[in-house]
Length: 67
Image (cartoon, rainbow, N blue to C red; front, side, top):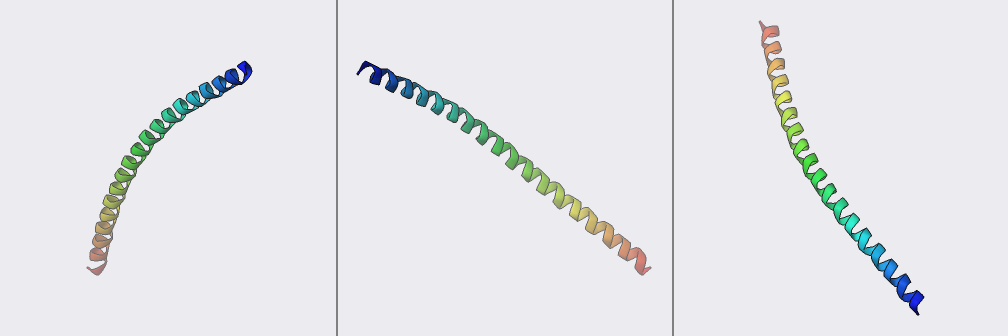
């Protein structure tokens, strides 16, 4: 009986430790996800600006070609 209680205590302590570890990992992953989403937004904006600049350059080249 005493052995069962000690074994149960150990399993409960292990579960508590694992829950704490997972909670920490979850917070870390959520933070990383937020950073990645912000980076994605910045990259999309840079890509949009690059496309816009490229379109202007192509238009200028076409204008020069027509002259």
